Amino acid sequence: MELKICHLYPDVLNLYGDRGNVLCMCQRLRWRGIDVAVTGVSVGEPLHAADHDLFFIGGGQDFEQEVLLEDLAGGKAAEIRAAVEDGLPFLAICGGYQMLGSYYKTWDGVQCDFIGALDLYTVGCRERMIGNVLFSCDDLDGGTVVGFENHSGKTYLGPSVRPLGRMISGHGNNGEDGGEGARYRNVFASYSHGCLLPKNPALCDRILTEALARKYGEARLEPLDDALELAAHDYMERRLTANK
Ligand code: GLN
Image 1 (cartoon, helix red, strand yellow):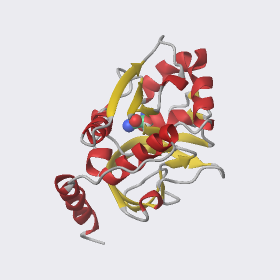
Image 2 (cartoon, rainbow, N blue to C red):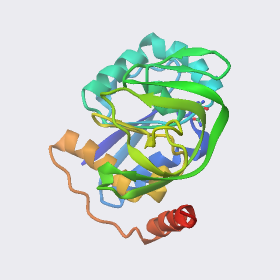
Image 3 (cartoon, helix red, strand yellow):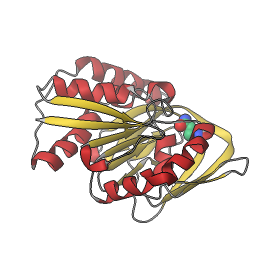
């Protein structure tokens, strides 16, 4: 078995080591004897979604997102929309998550028309939402996810999209409705940066299982010894629930 991972804009969208999520996916596949290949596709390079089994998009500042608008409009946006509808799995973080939506209006009034693959939009506010977060996740049967957020955009989901999680601590999508991230078809999107998958191995395996099942019909990942990963997760969970 092999998974082909496409890392979109790896040189432009990589805040707080978001690329660590790709390393984590690769390593957890290799530990199970499953081959993995990663292809970066960046500005000016053609994207053929059908060549890949799983997509990753990291986060970026408003500036980087604005820089990518032209490249997206040159064909990638349509390709990504079709891939999402076709059930290809995606993990998108923060700025990458916002880009899957219809638009982002920055706090200083710049209108960025994005991919429109997910029924959601983002509006910037002056006060940034920053800090460690904890949320429960239906995809993990209510299990919790720890992460770190830093965004000015407040994201609002339309009726066809559900949140990835329910906030226990932190702001999440907008600091108002208690939702975090987005789920639509096989898209997983979150405001949590860098260490999302390394500290939440169950979420990593959930996404990998989706990709393997789509490619091979069915998939069951062998359990791994996640003692270290879970110690990191549990430590943050204890910190974030200590005063609740
Ligand atoms: N530019 C977006 C915001 O501030 C996303 C930032 C990020 O990816 N951390 O809302």
